[in-house]
Length: 449
Image (tube, rainbow, N blue to C red; front, side, top):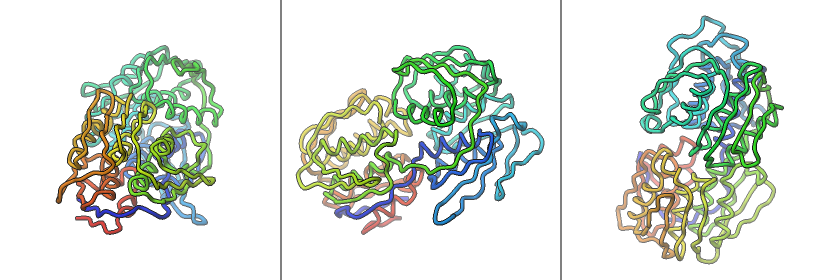
């Protein structure tokens, strides 16, 4: 689907959707738990539905989401780390009861576009002995899990893959031991941290981490281990972990925090057009690293006003360039780059080489599409320098290629709001992967075809 975005000032209040990172972690933890869990106000998007489908294949029961007092809830019945039952085929549940039929053979899980689900579920599947085949869309089939698969192999888990990419077949048992796991994406490490505690009692998993990007996402995962009383040892710099087996994830009930990654896009829209826009449902004390975007906007000349769990972004003066380290927050690169296009002076987005291994090579793709808006960039091995002139000047009938990447689509949709002429963006439907309703946010004077 293609959208045509008409220039306008982005103002008003926007309710930010629930965090994808938290929702997927809560879904998987609840599905592995020893009792029922209630996830309140989860993100219901393409990626989280892919995760829910994987959880149901693992044998977890999930009610259809329902409204209770205005709150959307998912009720999850876990499999107690595969201890209570054989690995089973799950049906679509309305009452929260698991199928207790025969062990499932020829298991296949399609993770869609969800890299988080792909990596996390690979490790979880290694806890049991039934082979599981993982596949996904075209982008997933290009995203390598090789470092994770190598680490799992050293822990006794067997796998076959297409040179580290999907389709991947994997099965346990998990035998523990020592492994070294370089993490260009933090999802590799989080996958082991979620699965390793469920190894049999007496099995110890030791992980050396010679490289770790996106540290805040590991901190998010560790926050769940701490909440559930799961023991682990961690070096202060996260270069080594020791996780004993024999633990259980506990049933829980709680809300999913708002998503700072998604919030970056309406925040960028306010920064580009001046705002003010108020973003609702964001906890400034949450572990999400992408809240750094608000510090970036402040340094670039925006006014950032927090009031409990809402933040207002506005600007009266021109945006100015700066230098920002995105190692912990590579998902911010598209939103930061389009904002920098409207700034005066150079903006350097550095230390984010791992942005090249997301749904697309976001460094290259962002530079290519900014050029269509008349913005000059210098591409670095690990980032971008955007040479801003305070405004952009795309020609009439400019068409931005969304490249099937939700963050590229959203970034250039908000950039189009600040352009002097309407701009079209392809693959607009991809925004729903993480931000259902995003197109409606930019829909004022915007057409879809």
